[in-house]
Amino acid sequence: MDANVNNSLNLFIEYLQIEKNYSQYTIEHYQHDIRGFFLFMSEQGLTSLDAVEYADTRIYLTKLFDQQLSRKSVARRISCMRSFYKFLLREKMVGDNPFSLVSIPKLEKRLPDFFYEEELSQLFNACETDTAIGKRNKALLELLYATGIRVGECCKIQMKDIDLSLSTVLIHGKRKKDRYVPFGSFAQDAIEDYIKNGRPELLKTKEDHGHLFLNFRGGPLTDRGIREILNKLIEKSALTGKIHPHKLRHSFATHMMSNGADMRTVQELMGHAFLSSTQVYTHVTKEHLRNIYMSHHPRA
Image (cartoon, rainbow, N blue to C red):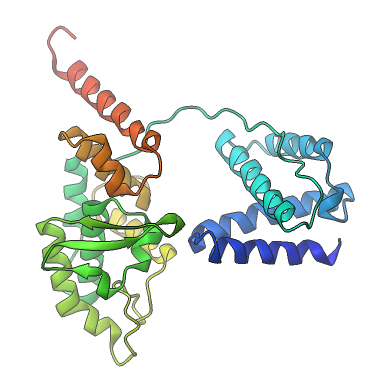
């Protein structure tokens, strides 16, 4: 295969890191999906990215479905390749975007997965706070639920971004959009305890790099590290299944809307660019109310 193929991927990754400010977790997904397409190119005898035509993309789409991937996974890969070729076209590395006309399969509408308040209580109770790691985990869990921030945003929080006097945190969001998000007394107490009694122990003799959340070596906590922490907390609790940071984000939005918060406020707090992204939580709360009604009304 042409050596420029791998070089183009490296340039695209730099673009995602620097211009788009994507998280490492998202970038790894892009790399995985694009390398999968490179493998397809080798199988089809396509030696350069400019040699790919619309007919090839249709064969690629068929192969994805043959692998019995979900519609969501197929849609993600097609979207990834479309963005990749859009970048290559901008950089004049190809003459056409063969994925521009590929229709992404319609996704089945799924409501966001969230925790009920009783389940969250079990999760919070699973946090032991006698160790520095335990204090960090409690602060992390409380802040994620209190603010609804994305895991990538959580990793970027610096000590200077936390204002304990006002109970707010400065979040550096997607597309370099900053926003201030308040948090409540539970998160405040957990963060204060962690900063005073947990973080110094984790930092040890290492030079302070300013990140709020640290791993056991004293380095900045990564998004992958946060996912592992949450999964371990699930194992300790009485809950079943897996947890993901977005489930806490969904829980934040769902509980805010269920308790009367207006959609515009939730949109601002979550850092959604479009109100339609926030609107899905109105469906969640309606479904939740319907389930309660059907379960408890004597003539339901």
